[in-house]
Each structure stands twice: as structure tokens, then as C-alpha cells.
Image (tube, rainbow, N blue to C red; front, side):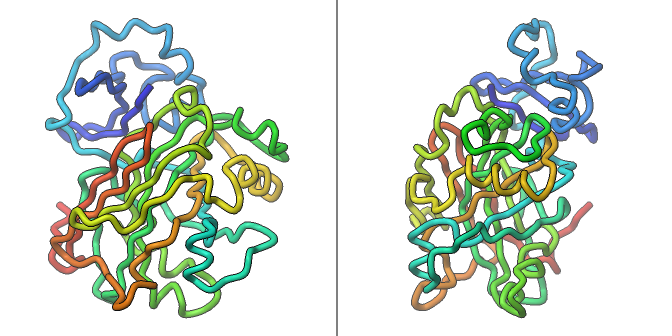
Length: 288
């Protein structure tokens, strides 16, 4: 299944995507209403398989605005330097443990929404990544059981302000400017992705391929990341794990390539879809 968080005529909702038809789940009420996180918390995603949705309202994708897949995550845990190719271009040694930092919910936008280059910096870089959404409570989960707690997967662009990221050894400032990270276009449920280590990821900037890799290049697999993260913090339905980016980021190109207003950046992952965002200047963007 593909589940979409969206806004239609000022109303936030969750929908089920079938081909290019978006089935609005709002009339079902109960566990199917509210946010996608709420649906996961109440176990509603699994029950959708057996629910009659044919009589529900249908919208076209042109009628909606996409929201970040999870609009209200309790946790967004991001992994740095987790692909061998990125480790090599960054000149880093293989880490013993995952490098973990956090993002805030207001740093994210949905598919087709603009990423904002802040007025503080022009060093706005792209990072195409696989996003993992937790579907069941998980604490001290073993690697062998880790995929059982996954609700599904999505695409992510971990937009980064490189100068702010490098102010200290802590990445957080460069990763949390408002509306700098793209998350979408939808959640593909875990039953459709048998092995997240066998996906292909490509990032394109204005149509030019900048990153091109298989997720098998991860240093710490999705299962290992869940094991590690669930060891220091309980994971809950709707929590998001951003698994790291591959080589080819703008910062390590000669000369560096920064995203600028008017650019179009796409992150495509096989079996999931394509996250597309334009870039705008913070000072020129009307949030109304």
C-alpha cells in the first residue's frame, strides 16, 4: 500500500493511493482518522487490507498538497556518514557505531513543496536518503527481528547547510533550518519492500544525476540501525529513521554545487517513487 499525508481545502487527512487515485480515508473515522502517525499508533494500517474503501471520496493528486509523510513524529533520528562512498569522499574512517543526530518536525516539507534556502547561508546541499517509519513499539530490538517493527519506507532529502553543520562537531544546526528537508511522496508499506538493502537510490539536480547507488552500500543496515537506536531510546509508531546518504553530495564536488532558488531536486528510490522539490529563498517565500 501507498499511504499519503495531505491537505485538501484546508483540511489535513490521510489517503490510500491506488494508481493515480487518492482515496480519502477521513470518512472511516476512528483509527483511520487524524494523522498517519495516529493510524500507525492504532494499528489501522494493517486493517486497511480488509476494509472496503470503494465508496470513499476519491481525489486527484492535482487537488491536494502533500505533507511530510509523518507530520507529527515523536522522533526523527538521522544517520551521518553511513555509505561507504560518502565515507570515502568525506575522508573519514569506518565508524564503530552509527553517527546519530536529530531533526525537528518543522524542518520538513512534503513532496512538491519548496525547500527554503535560508538567508543565513548559500551552502545548501542535497542528500538523497531512504526513510524508515516505525510501525510498532520497539525497545532493545535485535537485528534479526528489526524489520518486523517497520511500518514502511519513503524518500528523504536531508537538505543541509554545510557551513552551519561544521560550526562544531555537532551536526544539528545545519540540519534544522525550517523547511529544508523533503519527506515523501508517500509511505510504501513494508510488505512491498522485502529487503531494504536491495533498493536503488538516485538524486537528480535539475535533471542531472548527482547521486546513484544501491542501499547495499550502507555501512550499517536498516536492521542494525534499528537495533542500535532502539537500544538507547524506545521507538514508537510514527518515529522516523533517516538512514544516511551516499557519495556525490555538492560539498565534495569541485567546485562545490549548492542548491539555489529555481532548482529542482529529485530523490528516486526503486519500489517507492520520486520525491520532488523546488528550491526557493526564505526571504521570498510567502508561507500563507
